[in-house]
Image 1 (spheres, rainbow, N blue to C red):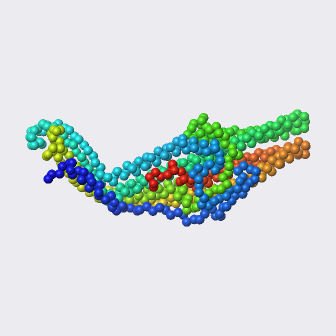
Image 2 (cartoon, one colour):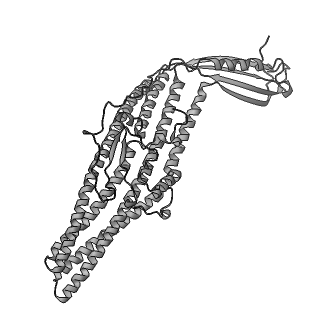
Length: 497
């Protein structure tokens, strides 16, 4: 009994489908790095920062070890305009959208690679009209030298994954997908932190601008008084010149502040996916922000599972491990199973009739014998790349711990700096008030008043900057700890990896 194309081909494909996909996967099996064996971030444990009464942002902050980080941590500042700007940025930011598209590319590449586990089936149809030389035997049984030839054909090929080349390649692509995923998450955490810090800096500059304008008014009024006193003979030209210089110096500090403020407004617009002339109209004020007082601090063992840069470095290490197996498998034999079946006839209506069918089965094994050392050195390069990725992972972990430690220390010192700045500003204000009264009453010289005014100016600016530092470094702590992305459903791994 002869086997026709219709009868044996499905049986052959089914048999290929039953062939085992697993064999020995050459190369190392990836092992997730163990978390660092450390118990704290800083040399001495931190508990609560100092507080400063009657100052915006002067509340003491408490560090809660092992506390959970909220997915929308920026809401702890209790600023509706800030929340709206964050949501706008997450919706419209083009860097984030590009990172999301890159993740889609990586996922599709993984799905495309999975096709190598199955037989490939192709179909073809050819039609030709030929005339054969009379000097050779006719090709057809009819002995015709001029004839048509129609050939439909199905071909099947299957490459058994004997040494795990396909599995290691798929493993590498999955690891690359995870790299891109955590890069996208890093873009998300950086974006949210940048929006918060930029808004805080812009609010700080507005306060500095207001303080500078008030100082310009004070100096302008004092100049008018001096000019009047000079005209009446009660003041000398040196005092007038000194006040004119002081007014010019204070006025010169205003344009840089206005420039920086405008640039921050432009940055907020771009972070939200808008053009600079479409900057948000909301005005951020430090006094409208609430300083989060209970700060969660992840355990050191949890940090490596939260920081997207650490997880990206881990995925890169996984990729390097899989590529060692790929390099080893490329030096081993490759087996290909093939089959084809079809029908050839001189007329269309004769196709698939008795006697027109053909089929073939084949198996081929190829192995590299001499490649000039190429494959050997590619394997050695893959092993060296794994060592490189391992060192990069360790460096990334150290940097992550450094970020957290630096931010914790900054918050502790920010609180102390704010307390000192507030005390200095209060003392400078008292000194200025006394100097002004004594000068007006004739008990103090103008140079003493000028010195008090300069100290007051610097004290106000230092206070505003100290307030902004507390807010900005609080946002930096949430970013350093990973930003709470693992609590957001839209950032979950859709493939469950």
